[in-house]
Image (cartoon, rainbow, N blue to C red; front, top):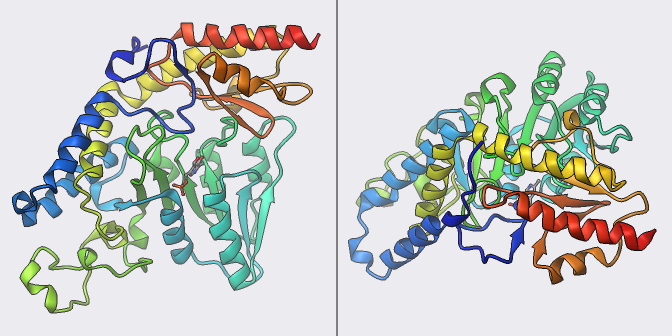
Length: 381
Ligand SMILES: Cc1ncc(COP(=O)(O)O)c(C=O)c1O
């Protein structure tokens, strides 16, 4: 268990920010890195050719350490939807086949696959939310010889509902189907065994559990797709891109690994140093340690919320860094405003109050939330 790391963030004493799934606050060190990075372009003559490449490679390497892959397998993208577009372009789907998605998934994951399925005459299936919270069984039941690909999260973005990726990936491999992951709401806070799961592609926006700036995300690309088609054909993805004078000579080859999928202007001199500082801090803490610490907070909240008569998923069906608090008659319309008035920040997604802490939170934040929940429940009675 890690002690509170609140001192590393700029969070006023009376704010209980329980909304990392919306966007994380930036570490002070990340803000500083961004300020320094932005200042570099005030003096562009100090930016050397090497700076376009070396720093990007450092970022790739840090992300690879968090994800459990190699730097060669990492592309830098501006958003999860960009990464998903790359995956959609490269995973084979034929007429009559099926694309499996979880119902109420984040739209960036759903729209590209609906469109791809429509274009090729495949069927996109939104698997319904299971009454018993067992998403894994729901997905396993749906996989058969018609499945071309499943595009899944490790945990559902609305309430942390868990998908056992090892079980699902094994079944998908048995039927020869691809696996594309959206790890935006899990990577950095929920341990992932990428070497066992072995997805085809995995996207992760960087501004939530990876504690980075908005506008920078990551795409893991399995080796068998390294010869695939990027969605843009930019200069920096080409071999020989380091030779700026030679850019007038067009080349057929790409830089190695997943680099061909990098977004244009990937050498962002403000965002990349911020992301490097954030990932470095995550590695210092350790994802296992983060997960253990956050799980203790959500377990405490789960027990106390249940004692108030509120409903939560049992621990085997939810990710430890998340808690969806469900109200038997729906989320009270006043709750969000009451929380805001008390400077407690959480989200309402679907029929859950989504509570997503990080290391700047401690029991005091949970107790403040519980006080409001207790009042809400009492007022209803
Ligand atoms: C599950 C999930 N994926 C992706 C995103 C962000 O997608 P994008 O980077 O395309 O804006 C979010 C944002 O809330 C999310 O919850």
